[in-house]
Length: 159
Image (tube, rainbow, N blue to C red; front, side, top):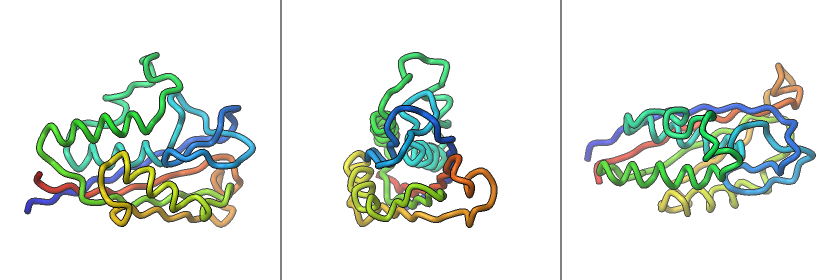
């Protein structure tokens, strides 16, 4: 089976009055992330990893922040659209691996929920979704708690 891999990255600053959403799950925190959609950086990084693996563009091409249709929209809906596009070109999602870098909030209590949420939208088993939370050891803006960074790798195979 032909298999391909893609890499995704996203970052956002804290400061929004909306809830913090990561991987489709509301996370208890004093503020949400700044962004055009719901700013779910986990979903955004996974979207770009999947689009990279299938050479279908990037999140900014499909869901531009200049398009009012996506303002405040659920990033999980955007992820579902990407999954549909991937299936339309005869690829299947094999797995995704995500690393979230943030000092706050602590994500360990939410990792299982995020895995299940992403797996449900991607239509893959939760065992094919990995989410790891790391800190930046107090270095730079992320380490000072002003935002977070997410990295994702995805693999796809011929459907």
